[in-house]
Image (cartoon, rainbow, N blue to C red; front, side, top):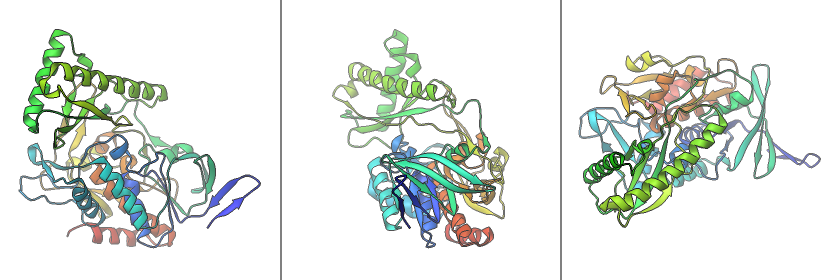
Amino acid sequence: MWVNNFLTNNIMAHPDVLIIGGGSAGIAAAAGAAETGADVVLLEKNTFLGGKATAAYVGTVCGLYYRNDDPVVRYAANGFPRVFAEKLQRLSDSSPFFYKHGLRFLPYDHLAFIQLCDDVVQQNKVTLYLDAHLMHVEKDGHRIHKVSAVIHNRSITFHPKVVIDTSGESTVARFAGMDTVENKTYQAAAQIFIMTGIATDDEQILHLSLLRSICKGIDDGTYQKHYDMLSVVPGSLKRSRAVFKLGLPFEVRNDPSEMTRLQLFARKAVTEIAHYLQIHNHLFKNAVLSMIAPETGIRTGPRNAGKTVLQKEDVMDCRKVGDAVARGTWPIELWAPGKKLHLEYFASNDHYDIPAGALQSASVTNLLFAGRNISASEDALASTRVIGTCLATGYAAGHLAAAVVRDESYEAAITTIQRSTFFE
């Protein structure tokens, strides 16, 4: 597999499937492709796996279950997404959290998430490169034939048969000069942090006490109004430790300088909030700020242009299609700067189909995508971007990629995906 060119000090590799991004979708894609026997390489820019689930510490896996009031959860997908979720539940010593209007999700421990991702990669014999940064993507007509990355200060050039972009930012398309679907602004971001030593294990008491402290602080000028979108992540309070989410009051744009400003603002805000609570809220008198997530949680961004564009109407009407490769069950979840969460629900106990065409490039024959950068409108993406659905689209992309490697039709792969992950 390896050829070392000593003249250029550039390593070359020829994998069957090259996956960009080691988040939920990337891990699932690696598992899906590898289980068919494909030679898989996975590149991740961080030094750990999990993507936003671990770097931004989302804290909950949404999109795993149907929305209903039944006492027993009903999974949206069988196969890999369900197996991953049940292992994560055991590793996290967690259980599905029943939220309002029939919604339920799975709280998780971020170290358990990293451990599980490591296990999936190793068990499937995937070649993994951490600290891997994409540098160049080259097309030859309608195919990607070369991808270059810098990995631990070494340059590696890949000549893959198929590329799967699970970066969440349409990175491959942008490096290749391809069209992407972009907005001027995106959903508001959030910063996650953890405090320990809280003097209660009752989440309702903590929620009400937090709300009172914020309102009082804003009224008397000791707490910044910019920081009012603060909440406890539901289901996270355990053994005097809780995960908090701060909604940030700015629009998210594609401007790198603004993204840096957002990160700096978020970290400063969290330290000020923790200090305020330690002084002004008796539940936090002995509490300490134990973790600020390394990344700010960016919810949506540029998407790929696919053969099919999933639309809001497809989501809200629970539209079914013949080439379905995943099912969406999470409502459209919209976050605007300085405003409370807005959810748009479709019918309970129902789902919409995500078509294979939303995972396939419209212009490049060997480029697939999954996770937060599938081909979808901004409103549709507000439903599909959740971790549970990312696991499903990633797994599907892995199987579609394997079909390209074997020079088989997508139809056969779609049938395999449906049989392994759909319950009917």
